[in-house]
Amino acid sequence: MTQTPNDFDPRPGEPVRLADGLRRVLAPNPSPMTYRGTNTYLLGTRELAVIDPGPLSEAHLQAILAALEPGQSISHIVVTHTHVDHSPLARPLAERCGAPMIAFGGPEAGRSPVMTRLAAAGLAGGGEGIDRDFAPDLTVADGAAIEGDGWTLEVIHTPGHLGNHIALGWEEACFTADHVMGWASSLVSPPDGDLTDFMASCRKLRARRWQVLHPGHGAPVEDPAGRLDWLIEHRLAREAAILAALADGPATAADLAARIYTETPAALLPAAERNVFAHLVDLVGQNRVESLGPLAATARFARLT
Image 1 (cartoon, rainbow, N blue to C red):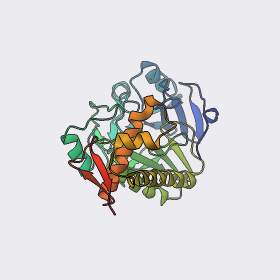
Image 2 (tube, helix red, strand yellow):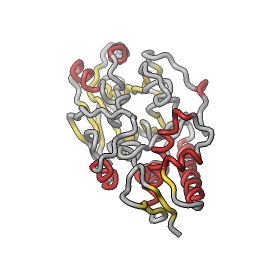
Image 3 (cartoon, one colour):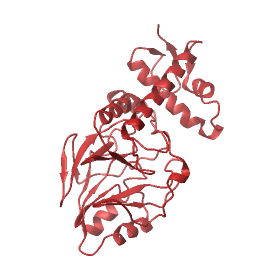
């Protein structure tokens, strides 16, 4: 259920037609976290919505503007979430075209109560890169409609990867940003990411009958139901592995990551540890695990029977 690298290798800056009224422009920011780069989408035929302008890049700004065809203009700039590979270019683009920036909210909007407490206790992000300066011109709530010239986007609040993360329904397609991608599972790193919210958002999207998903990175997902089922089962399998490891006795997230991610390069173990901690917080919420002391990334956890 995971795409291979050869499945998706477009040239940055070149518009690619995906459907009538929909094009994609790849940003020039490839990395282990962003795959080939951030997908920026142009929706519409005359007055366009730009979905996820991307990182702060003059080259990408010029590519977006160059993609406008005669008679076209940008009327809306929609940001799915405030990681630095998705939102920073929104302000320079807005200044060039005069369109409003639309999002669920700022960097801490939608953060769950448990993650709010962890952040207040001093837990810092895991290096994903938050656009702390982002402030939308307009905020939208779950279920809202963003309407333009010949197109409508349904706002679907999908916290988990980030509290302010939204997906956008467009007819039978959905722009899923970083929540559902075909090349990798989404990063969930406290206190910005919340696994309890992530699983609920997966099930929320799974309840709909989408024909295709357009992710923030990578190729379109042609089997939405199958991919969402895989993501849910993948997380449940990781949860089972953590519970099995805790059957041997209390352990920290770092201990568990080293035992479970046996084939992961050492440089990626900190991210794996964050992932395990996200699961542990979720399991505490399910009353299946307890934190031996204050809930924290360095705490020892024990399985409840």
